[in-house]
Length: 512
Ligand code: ATP
Image 1 (cartoon, rainbow, N blue to C red):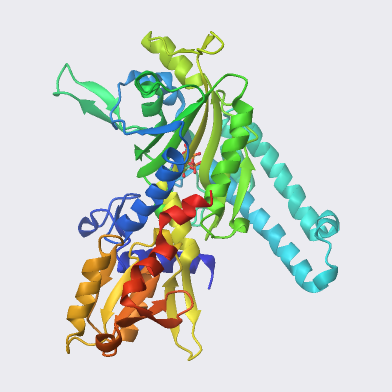
Image 2: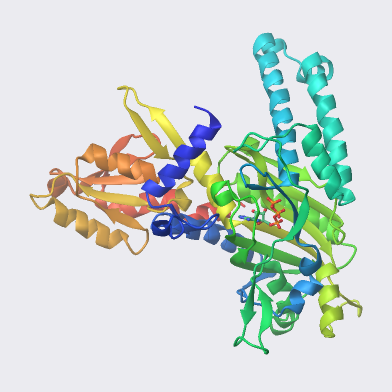
């Protein structure tokens, strides 16, 4: 199965099992907007809790806030979004589809990278244990040819990006022969800039109404509240402020499911530190955030850092944590050293003092800031795409299983009476009533036990608990493990401890 096919199946699975629905689907949906269903919201909440607790509980010097989506319009002048939050757009005249010119070129570059990796994989297969990867990369003619082409395109692209040369973007697309995936033609318009912020009218319409923006990032809420939090929380630099909330971007290319949405959620933390110490904190947060990801057990090889070559004018270091999505390695989280750009600009535009007085040294300064910023939805996609598996069983049947990290699973245990009679439902209900205060559980008595197992596998429930006739005498139940499908008899009295050991979020947090 190709990765493309797998991705389509994943999207269908998300809908079928109540994880994600297209928004307003009865009206044929709204592009790049999605709703989380009954399973999705649980998984999403668990991801958020893992992040929130890791930030605010494990770090005594990090506190959380929840700022409003609407902010004073000057916020977005100070942050630079009004002037420069743009994407370079290009249209295909035949399909009438719009694309980001930079993404078309980056996709082209990714394809070259894939070709190189395929060559290397072939070499590895051919030479077996004797394979010397470094030597192969340095000498294989196919690899060298592709690499030279990559370097040439990459250099042109970076120059166009640095100089904001829209005509050159178009020329690169034409020279590379990039076609529209829909029409298959090269009938492109010129490239134009397009601001990604959504705006609306605030207050009663008419003369008094002001244009306000739906925030394109949550971070600015933290910057404008920084002084309130610092003073009321009596926070000492270094300290951090964390926030989870919705953000809105009028994204141009909106074709990768929840990877790129127009309404999405971010988990951002701004860490304020003394100027001059920011590189040390940048390094610490890089390590810290990678550890948070790898700790979920989805394979360290599926993550990599991508250090930015071109830094935004306000940043003095930036990196992305990329994840191996079904469509390749792509940005999952950004870590940026933002200097005093945001606080400094807000101080200037608002006229309010945003300096920090260091009681130990007697100095006053505007703190520098290191930001960690991750999209909840992208994290959701990472977890889901990594967990989705189609397995062939020994008896030749196939099963679909979501091997989600157990603490993130929407339902932790399913309580299943073997039959709907002989007092079994009553016992099952009793177990359910006991466990429901600690775990999100599901009681299910319809269909055969095999079908019920399959349904729970498909939503990633770590444990199925079956109540059978023996339960009435021995007060034990059969516990089936999602991943191994092994079954064991467990006394009802020991259920809580058994489930807790596997699904308690604190066990994950303790490893950080
Ligand atoms: P990209 O280059 O993919 O557009 P970005 O560099 O603009 O992303 P940031 O502004 O650094 O992204 O935002 C931080 C994080 O927010 C990203 O790493 C991503 O996880 C998430 N994010 C950004 N835009 C979107 C979106 N349109 N849909 C879903 N998540 C998003």
